Image (cartoon, rainbow, N blue to C red; front, side, top):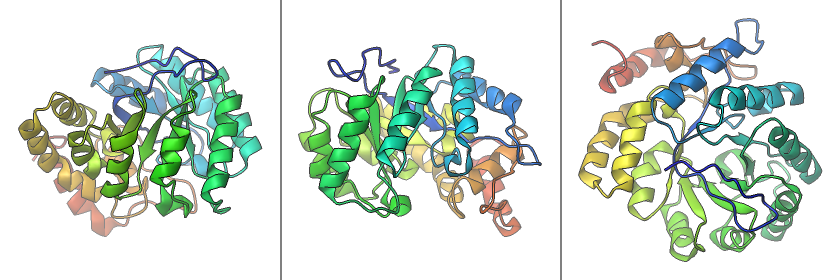
Length: 308
C-alpha cells in the first residue's frame, strides 16, 4: 500500500501516499529540548508495526512551537531512520505563502518525499486565495504536495470544489480531510481525478471514509497503536468491512481518549503510559489533566496495549 512518490511535483502526477500514515509526535525531554533518541525509537516502532508512511511536524508533532532548525531536524531524523522503507510526508505549511515554499524546499532537501500543506491559519483567505496559495507552493516544490484541511485549527475550510480544482494540478496528489463533514468528503471522492488520494484526518472517520472508497488515514492514535490501526486500514482496503468494524470498535475508546484535551496532549500521555517517550509538551500546551488518566489507561487496555 506504500508509495514513495518518486516523480517530482513539476512533471506528471507523483504518487499519493495511501494506507496508514502516523502523525508522529515530536518527543521532548523534560527541559523542553528535542528527544532525538526517543524520536528514532518511535519511528522504528512505527515501521516495524506496519505503517505505510510517517508524517512528522504536523499538528500532532507540535510544529507550531518548533523553530525552523528544529523542524528541519525532526524531518531529517525521521527520514534517516526510515531509510527509504516508507514515505515521509513532512508538515511544511505556513500562513505566509513564501514561507511555505521555503519550508517545503528545506524539508525536501533533508529527505521528505512529500509535504503536507494546511490551509493558511488566521489570515482566512477566500477560496480563490487558497487556490493561489496551494498552486504557488506546488509550482515551487521539488516533491508532491498533500493538502491538509483542518478548519477546527485554521478557521478556514478548503471547500470540495476548491479541493477538486487543486486536484487537477500535477504536483498536488492528495488531501488529508479533517473537516468533520462526511458530505464534503464524499463530494471529493465522487469527483476526484484518477490518482488523487483522499485520506481521513480524523481517526473515527477512517472506516466511513474508506467504505466510500477513500485511501486511508493520517492517524493520531497510531502513535500508540500502529499495528492495530494498520489492521483496521488493511481490512477496510480489502473490503473486509466486518473485520474493520470490529477493530474500529475496539479502538474507539482510544480514539475518544486521544481528544479529551487538545492534541497531542493525550497521545503523549498515552506514550508515556506505554514507557515509550515522555509526556512533555511545549507551552502553551500543558500535560494531561490527571482526571483523564483512568479513561486513557482503560482505553489502552481495551486496545491490548496495557496489561489488564
